[in-house]
Length: 440
Image (cartoon, rainbow, N blue to C red; front, side, top):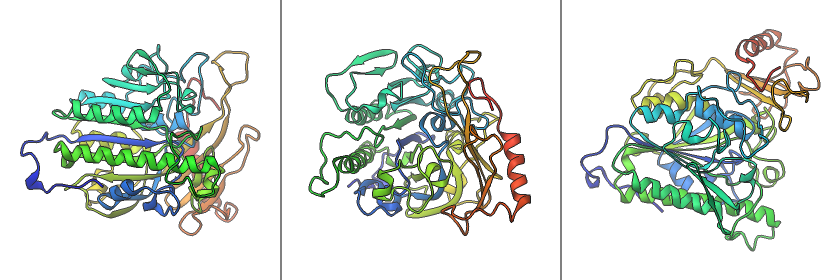
């Protein structure tokens, strides 16, 4: 296990601005970690991270699927305002690119003097367009650019900056783990931002070794799923050990989250979403709740737990405040730094999600059917409104749940609260605007 040196053992001179590491799991349910109640999957290092930092109980991903969730994280805009509102594969390698005019966390931090790197899965552009991570503020990238290719853990290639790197049977996650350690070593002397979107535990469920679950009697996929998470957990521990050995521990804040809720099947077996309703692709809590653990020795009180309601788009102002730099004015986020430091935290009036189906290869103006709004949701205090199957029924009603008494969203109380329903509809009408590829 990693350890924390006392302040007296640390190097005396450290940069004023903290290093920032943001680790993102892929398709991992909020309850897949021991610190969130998981009983079957071993996650000792992330559990230790929680005991030494802050665990959030009501944190939300940006969307219920990969690309739009990552888009909200990068731009600080919820999907109602965002450009990418659903998964969208381009005809060639790559996904719908963030436009050149988008302002990303990486661009903001680079402007503030940070060296910026992404290692893992990008999903917001391809090798030859404006959405490439090196065109969106990252000094260094080692990635799957196309999230379709990220379903394979033994790919034939990855991308290092603009160069295609051919592989020969390597397990991609292990490459990402080693690259992340190397990035930290190379950039130890100046403030750095490392965005580490691991692909674990997204299917395929591939892993070199299914230990320590080999003798469980589970299905092979179940063994692999658990082993993938435990493997990622071990690499998180390696990152903390390296930070400690380089005397960077107290000047580095580390975030850990997941891009959406757990998938059906694995979630049912492992209790990945707990008692929350729904799975990935649902706007119910099981599809959009994310773990959030934040560790910053000497700044965040060890073992603290926050019930503050937060979401991915809060990262833009949070990291901007950490970097002591200006934040884009149109962000939908609110900085979490006061909460992390035990101070009074402003609350969101509402949180908003839109999720679109997509037509493979569709382009604006084409004869094919366009992308369709499938579901949307609003959280307003303890109230949660959800609309489903909108592509089939544009007049689909809003379901209403009181999360304080019904966190599993089992009791629709819309008929008893028409005023709340109307208010949620007003928020949706105001906050959800069309983008080029996603129109109501």
